[in-house]
Length: 390
Ligand code: ATP
Ligand code: MG
Image (cartoon, rainbow, N blue to C red; front, side, top):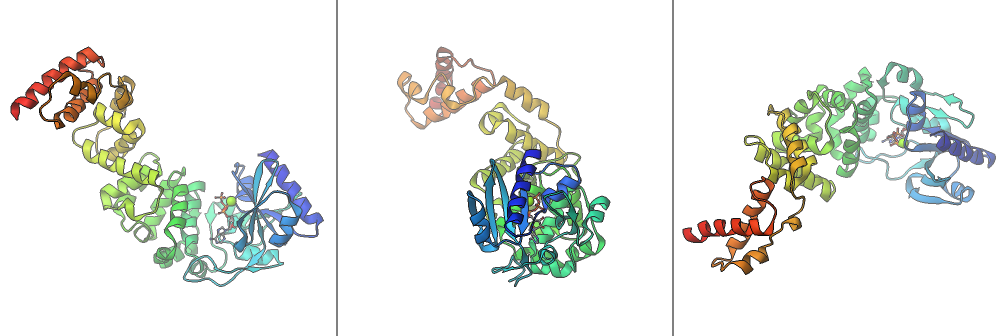
């Protein structure tokens, strides 16, 4: 962390030497004052993007239209953004066009929360235009200026308020909370991808349940997820959960359709798997086949969903099954479908596949050894019952 900061200070000095103003801003300063470590460092500067590009050899154009460049230095990445002033906001979203500014004050005024507008210069001096330090000490999330106006300009700020709550455990300052209540419905104007990015940070954060509780208190949950019962259950959960589990629970309780969101294929599939596992196990419990087919992690998530809905704790059972699984992949079966076709005169070809499935289950449940001879004997027995009943 110290090394990253030193490199950052080097960048600030180079910008200043070239006649510009430059400061650390945002998450880094906030986390620094709280004694926490940060992943990335944001820098705000009076230098225009072209001027920043000239000063550093490795620069990526991450958001050049918004005045943001990524400067790579000593193996670290820094988001360097040119001072901006308030610009036109379209339909409660991020401005389509932006206006660069020479004024730090203007740049700080356009930021979302008081705790996010603290800046630090290369010598470690903190500048605070909007009482951010006091709010940081009090643990308050307070919009800069008129909260309702700020949420009207960019409705994503509302979700960011809850996200910072989830990460920091802060409270919502009163007028900010009132504005969240009044403007909550505007979140529908925000692109689902931006909403998802925030949710993927919010849900696994240490104080996510506090944030969900606040969402319910200010009637934001319904606007965000379309339903509230699942959020209520999550907010009251005695344990933390991850985003997959949270969405699976909402799918079960509120009929939330994960396909209408735009999460990655992998994430969507995980949510569906956990939802189905819940359906399959809420009455009967987890079997070796469940653990084999979906993996321990998905079963643990489904168990969490089950428990949140009043089901029994089956973690120990899942762990024991997983530890004892004789095989982890279908390819590890000592007898293949082809072997069954070769060894027996199977009249109805579909019996080959179903027999193989039964053998797999028998192996997983420890009823038959995963050994070719033993499996052939068992296959003969299964086939006899099948082909007789036809
Ligand atoms: P993190 O720890 O997640 O990086 P952060 O506060 O640095 O938190 P970023 O998304 O990296 O958040 O944004 C950097 C800074 O840009 C914020 O601290 C804030 O000052 C400003 N900012 C970001 N998004 C908005 C927004 N929608 N409206 C106003 N200001 C914003
Ligand atoms: Mg940041």
